[in-house]
Length: 312
Image 1 (cartoon, rainbow, N blue to C red):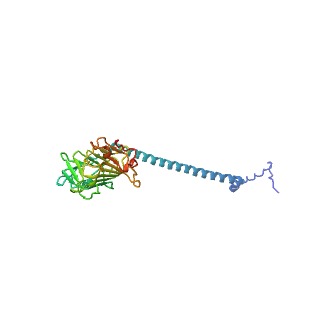
Image 2: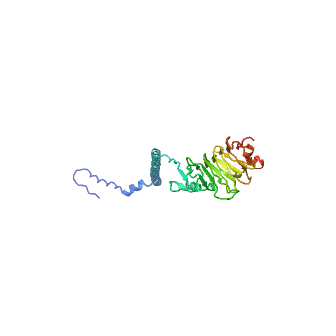
Image 3: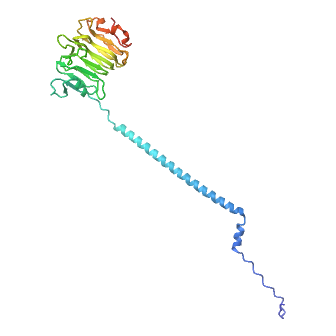
């Protein structure tokens, strides 16, 4: 029992009880006691990660697209610059200057050859071959071949009158055979094609023309000493804008069996008939057209609709 002092003072109050101390883990427990808080915190974290990843991916895609656009733009500008450079620095295409080649026995002269065949083999399209000897002996075949041209002009050298005779003494072989000889030109004046083999024999045909021969031209020529035709045309065609042209031709015809132009065709051969052939009005003057222009067996089917034979 508490003893009170004997003095006259009043009763002494008891000291207050100490306040309870807050334990740290109790506060933590109280903050996280709700399970929903744990769930909400995890979801927010996932959303933040996904949002950051998406933003990063979009930024990378924008950088990639920008890089592609920059590359395309650079290439386009480079191509445009190259195009301008090519346009303003281009050089005009070289123009072929025709050359004059000489056929003569005297080959010491520049660009000279002993035969027309050899000159043609060395020629470029558009070249002119001149025959410089007044007697030329050669049996010639001109045909389309890879690496060579038939687009040449053959004529007499200035001031020359050339008599062209065969080197092959075979009556059945023409003096000049032209096979698919597009743009080939043989022109006078000053060239006589002579089929004399010897005192008793002569060539059957002087010139034979075969195949597709756009632009081929025989002009201003003389023919003599042949038994059948000055010019045989067989399975030969030009083109509408580049016909075969036979102009101002003359022949010494003394027999009705001879023809100036003789047309023939074998249906099994391409082209099947003759066509796009221009025949000048001044061919074979003084000769009956019925003799000058003949068809095999008088068969009009050997010619197409574009062969303008003179009326007989």
